[in-house]
Length: 385
Image 1 (cartoon, helix red, strand yellow):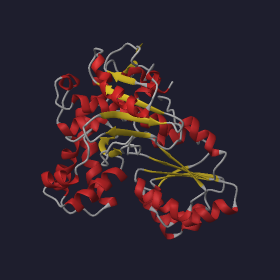
Image 2 (tube, rainbow, N blue to C red):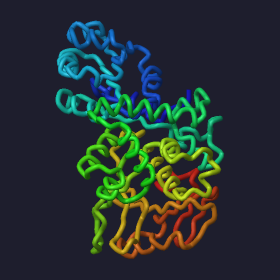
Image 3 (cartoon, rainbow, N blue to C red):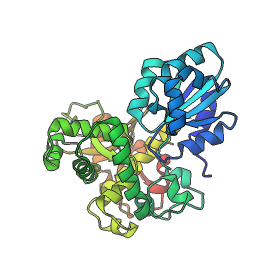
Image 4 (cartoon, rainbow, N blue to C red):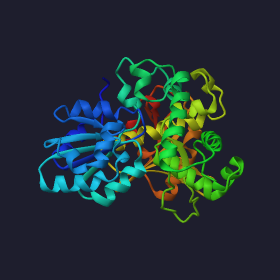
């Protein structure tokens, strides 16, 4: 089993909260991770029809079977159970673990019944950092972007061409229906592919809706479905304007680049070299690395982008409270001084030090210069050092 960086945080929070909630996309290894940590607690999946029926018909009796605590998987299938869990953890010193792949449904019930009692964590597909040093470490960023990070691809050595079509079809047929009643799933499938073609772009709801032949309100609702089920996420613009008018719309990214490649019809890592979305996919990969690192530490996200009216853009801003870390992301393997042009523009407005200006690129060498730092895609976390 490849060690998950989130395991340390789960272990520490067990002593502090009576309830722990773990969400994330399907097949990211939530069950495997929880079973490895909570070996002393029974594991019950509520996708099993017998377990689900018992929990729905007699929730109090169902929970009485686990006097020392329990791991409940896909618990969003039994929403009435949450209020009973509240009563149990308030009265007894036990630990209950809730797991599920539907963030919206799970979070809604936690906020209603278990607010203040629950530690909430998210598990995403493997990061490059988690694979580094293992026999599965990708030899190139193109390999990792194409393969994505879903554990079954590595554990079972499944080819992406076999894994992703089934994954996407199951997601649309099962998860989408669970969140929202979408009558025309073919239109939703087209919408999902159109989103893939907009990876790394500033979101334009009206243009997206027009291309998908749906209303803007439908497009907004469908984007919410994709976000709630951990297919896409949005990078928000940073709030500081430095006396310049800024773009206010978020940028669209996918939680896993393997999903994007499948939706775009990319069939091998070599096709990425000349693909029109090469830079956007590399950017998506690097941004995901910072998001995964943050979530694996159990912290809220602090990732933004910056884009001025005159199209001066910083791909990624890490807001650490006392300072901002600007990062430009370039897929090229060669270093080029022009990579720093937008960073230098931003520096004049913000007054940041040059030592905090970073370019993460597709090469393998790290280098400090008088202008800023070149950081290899293999060492992206060095930008936070």
